[in-house]
Image (cartoon, rainbow, N blue to C red):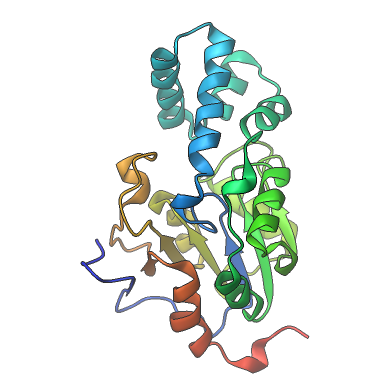
Length: 248
């Protein structure tokens, strides 16, 4: 865990960033802080979808939703397998949220802009959701592309095939790339493939997420941990990246 007052942690044998030319970011709870209140809205919309689909009350729907999440990785995957739900209909419904709570993040935008090389978003959400959120944050124009759940053939992270499909589609060498994620288990396969891994955790406990989703666990597949992404990029990444590695 991060110690009191500690914002960043790097393991002694961590993979560094000097050879990285491709920067890959998860979206939800990684590129925006918990106080943006994006994920709680999405989570509530998913619960509402389950309520309407099964005719359940909110408490029962919530319990079923969490059961699906733990068994299948995402509620969407469960509903596709068990109910034949149209994934596009589900995603449109789940991401129909109020984006006014997202604030422009100039420091994050500046840090991402100065990362040398390619920048990509890899998300279990939809492209439209990722683009709308990134646009509100003021960082969308820094990214080359979004690899969303549809591009993954609706197989969510942390399935190995999703990362392999992503790397192949975008021609990414995992040994020259870094992945920023908010859930520790989603970094196991990337680390095994050779990517530098960064776990992004909230600075304080987020009551809208499960505990395991926000733990600053120090495990072999996690090279770095941070509770402030912009600061981490500014202090721990950019100073060690040689300028000549920047893409023209």
